[in-house]
Length: 358
Image (cartoon, rainbow, N blue to C red; front, top):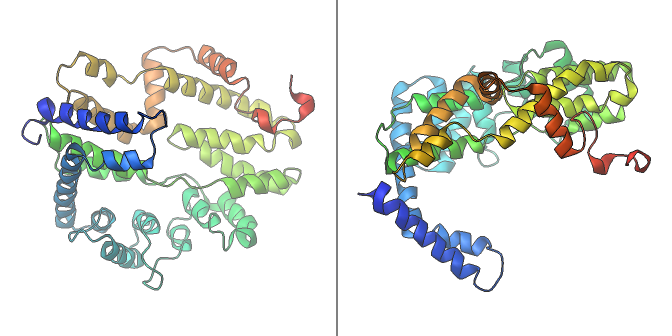
């Protein structure tokens, strides 16, 4: 399988997994966690797992050789040179306590070590980078201080935050800069799996505390100002989710603030068009996959897709693709609303008062 991954290996891996799932579903029951665990123990799954571990080790070594604080932090985030996740977390916390790069703190907050080992304080990110909305949302997400500090945090956001950055893009850019395999095959699949797997686990800061605050205090002008400041910063986000959350936050204030809908309606239509485009259009690399005879043919297209998205962000890529295709934004927005039965500025059907349901 290792020697001929794109020929025998991929096909055999698929056959092994299909056999496990067919056996599990023979009794008419849905496939459960036991079947998934068994599939992960097949020889094919173990081959790709071993390949990912080798890529991880190679990249950690390259990051340690680079030696700058951000590279060292990512090396520990990936498991460190010894492969011991617990010790790597301790080293990552130590790096974060002395580093001035806010990305190092953002990484450390995702990989806490055991209690008593010296985890960095959540507030460290906002102290290092008060202009970053995500740093404040991380502080607001701490259940221990949420109810006592939410008004303070929202005020600091309104006064100091100027942008929203999670560092997920920077993380992917850094991984894509590391030595990559050019040829299609097992190693390149392992590289892609490591990049996509680690990036997809990147946490999303919860807006729930801000949503609840803004819903409860929507009638207060001062609170409206704070909530709109958060929504404006979320609208600057580089992905579709951030833009949708910005609209959801603004939606809390519509009943209490005249004229606000007119201000956010154009943004809603832009986001709706982008959502419809993303949901109904196959990514450009898919056509290359279908035309490719090798079972590894998708790898080159996925890598290009990752590089473009890391450079432009998901939102920038969607806008560029729509512009290149001369997509009709108004038509796409109308189609999304028709399918959803609402605008992104309207509440979800379950949240509407009974008198408003037609």
